[in-house]
Amino acid sequence: MTPRPYVVLSVATSIDGYIDDTGPERLLLSNAEDFDRVDRERAAADAILIGAETLRRDNPRLLVGSEQRRRDRIAADRPEFPLRVIVSASGDLDPDLRFWHEGGARLVYTTTAGRARIGDRLTGYAEVVALGAAVDFAALLADLGERGVDRLMVEGGGRIHTAFLSADLADELLLAIAPVLVGDSGAPRFLHPARYPGGSRRRMVLDDVTRLGDVAVLRYLSQSTPADGSPTTMETPQ
Image 1 (spheres, helix red, strand yellow):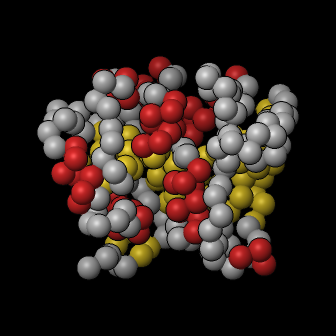
Image 2: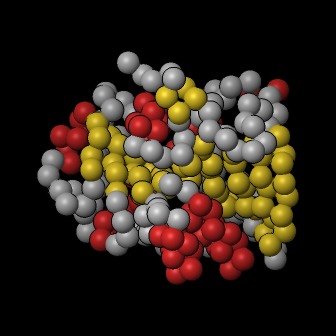
Image 3: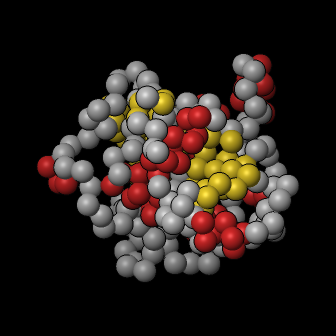
C-alpha cells in the first residue's frame, strides 16, 4: 500500500454554481479575506494542481503570496513554494505564460500523445510525466505520493474537480460561495455532468461553515475522510 496525498478541492462559486462569467476579465468571486484564506491553504499544501484550461484562461501564478508564510515554510524545512502541478491531456501548453517563470518546482501530467506534442518546449521549466493513453488520476496521486506529497490542493477548473469527485478521490471540499448570480449558460460551472459515486443519495459531511465578509466558506468531508484529515492509502497502479 502506498500513501496517497490528502486531496483538498478548493473553489469559489456564484450562488448559482458558476466559477466565472463570459466577460473578457476574470470574475473575482472571492473578497480580500477569502483570498487570504486561500493563500493560507496554499501555504499548508505540499502541491497545488490545476488543469491546463484554467492555466490558459486565468494565467495564474499559483504562488504563496504572504512573505511570512513562505518564511514559515522554509523554517519548517519545506520548499518556499509548494510544487505546482498542471494536468493537460493534449499537451497544449504555452511556455510564455507567467506560471513557468516564477516560483519553485513545476510538474506536468499528460498523456503519451500530449508528451509528444510538448516535446522540449518545457525543458528547464517543468518535469513532464506521461500517464499513458489517458490521464489516470489514481496513478497521478500515486506518483505524487511517491514524491512525498502528503497534502494536495486542487484549484480547478470544473473538469478537474469533476474528475476527482467522480473518481471518489477527493477527501475535502472547500466551497466559497459569493453573493452574486451569473445566470449565463455559456459560463464555466463548478462541476460537469458525471456519474458520481452514490449519486444524489450520498451525502458529504458538513464539517464547518465560516463567514468571511460577504462570502460563506463551507468545508465538506467525504464520508470516508477521517476528521483529523490524515492521508488515506491506495493500491499502487501496476
